[in-house]
Image 1 (cartoon, rainbow, N blue to C red):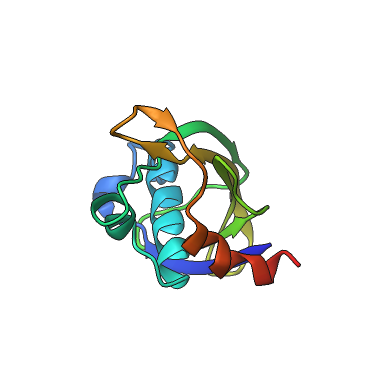
Image 2: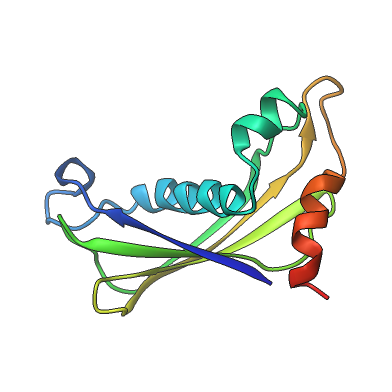
Length: 136
């Protein structure tokens, strides 16, 4: 398993009428976690798309809300790549508040997609090389 943590501060415009972080914004926070997790391996989404011609569309998303987050909370998004990718890459996400209390969990599955053929493809070898040491 490979894991990375990043922090996000809840902005006023991301809250709902009750003062809670709006439920739909968790998917965006998951995306920030995924992008930064991939970046921590020395690869950017931009590089995957522009240099290697690989897209990563989401094919499934699961979310579980445990506690609310509020305006100006500093959240920690822990993102784990749970297994070595093949045509798919699976992320497990945990969101913690400033007291390290778990407030939200989720799972996101993406596929490696070749836009030229409009079909799924295998994970690129250069990414697998970076991840293999964490799964041996």
